[in-house]
Image (cartoon, rainbow, N blue to C red; front, side):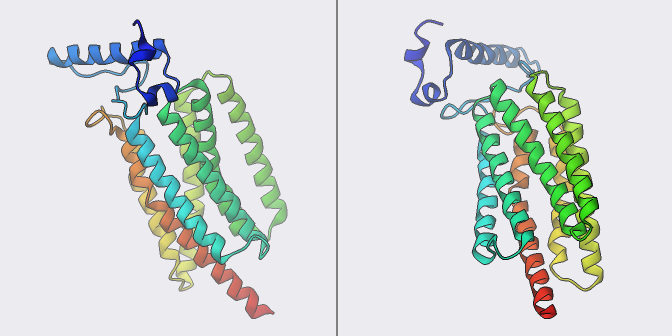
Amino acid sequence: MKNTTIQQDFWCRLFSWRCIDECKYHCMWSAVKKLENAGRQVVKFHGKWPFKRIMGMQEPASVFASLLNLLANAYMYSKLRTEFSIKSRPMVLLWHLFALVCMNAWVWSMVFHTRDTPFTEFMDYTCALSMVMGLYVAAVVRILHSQKKIVATLLTGSLLYFATHVRLLATGVVDYDYNMTVNVIFGAVGSFIWLVYAGYLSARGSRYSSRMLWFVTCSAVVLPLELLDFPPVRRAWDAHAVWHLSTAPLPLLFYQFVIEDLRYTQSRQDKLL
């Protein structure tokens, strides 16, 4: 394709779409049109569904949904920071770190879906796992914080496994099924621990526990969208993008539970003084 850089708009140049990338993109859509005209089913190209670029973004719907998740986390983090300073209690530091890990993961999700390269894929997968494992680690620390040896053992094991998995991702040879399985297992274990804790609080008459129960339930309901696969609707909304969109409201539930839980622990400590 001659003079590709001249034909490119500002956004494609900004995101460094090379000549070979433009050739692949336009050839892909030429093949899609031929398949559709022949009445045949649309197929994946290099393992990905065909998406229409918008403003240079490779998967604009996933970028938009990731942005909503980022904004939801940032909004609730601002509420957390306003009410609880890091210096107030060690548990608050945990939630500050958790929020930063989540926001970082959603930033890289946006970057990856904007421009899929080996590096952005590595960062997206690594940071996504850090967020999923963060949910598990936070549950362990919150519930077992008085059992320091047990917490230290579980955290050390988790960090070592995370480092091992990141090294595997860094090789560039990604076993996508294995990576998905790891995320699902840590997500399921973390959610189960939170579910048990919320059930314990509910049995003791806590009202705010319902937020965690709803969070875990809604997370489980929308999870099949990540495991399913279907061609993108309107050239943009595939199962993965819809899954990201469906998770955007969930941080509102989770962080509200965290805030109420911090208020609860603070009130208990004040009574002991």
